[in-house]
Length: 482
Image (cartoon, rainbow, N blue to C red; front, side, top):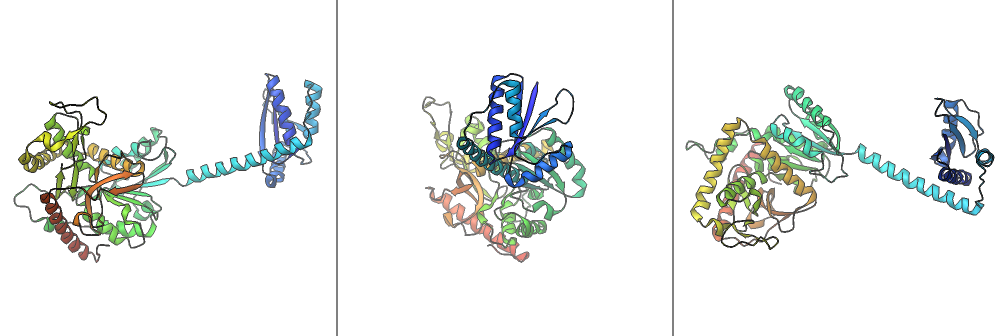
């Protein structure tokens, strides 16, 4: 088999002539192969000198350079020479000559140059994307929630398919060995979007150029809400140490990407998020700081679904107002249920749903038994697992991140903790869980729902109490709501 290599400057008409002749020979002869190398004009001299030096060839440097690969001999190739040398071989051995005119060759040479420029730009862009992946940092990565997140974060479940992801796991040195084992596991899974995954105990290294930070520290702020001897909500919050959270805000301010997204998970996440925002004093976009309300939303949906004998996913548009994990209102005023097997059913109608409140038809159950049942399930699950329910928390995080980056259905409403703009008389600047819709990269708060007067009053009272508590805690750290 004959394999020829033709290398030349992208704007060289003689290279165009040689490559066209080689293409014709490849089309006619099954055992004739050709490999082409296109070089930028400004790089040609350096390239040809290096190539000839490595192969111990003597050549005058003209474009193109042609050689024959000695595939069956394991050699470095046999120098043919320039375009004219290759034309002689084509005519002498294969009886073929080039009849292309100079004008046509010049046109082809120009096309080669333009193609080479485009290819170079695409290669540079791909290289830049590979070298500048979306950096995700997960704090307190020793929690089981992090383990459940790892594979999904880099396997086309959250971010756009062309996005490369670098994951940094932040925790104390004592957790390093276990976390490095998790890194080895996720690499072995060969996820399509993974660029790198590594462990550190240094906050600055972890947050440096991070574009998404998932704060899991507040999962450890476990406070009993079930004992009659519990102190007030404000007193419980004041007992907590938020100094690490404040450090996170300061480091985000110092080294994170200007458009970093921050998601605070578990515990008194609204207060923690307000501390992070207040400690980060640069002109960062406060609309990119969130708390996870989807987990509480899903728990309420599961209890309603069990009562109505439908799937959890069949309960839609349930809203969680307030502070996820602590003081909150589970609101079914705009909630709907699909696939309910009752007297009225419309399976033949796409998107057919029924009012959740009407299907439950028990206001006392919604007001008292629903939150009590949720709390009982939480206690039972924690007792059974002996730890936080990592799978369901991770699923809620992934769902919320998916909607943040990709959007959700236009008719779908979900809960998310975000910085208030004064909607529903919630104090401006206070992080509070509200109803929202998601368009890729944007959170659109649903700000004009028609709610019962009692619900509006309860939201205002809860917001004022959370504001007073947040102000007092922020003041203890020399901060204030931004």
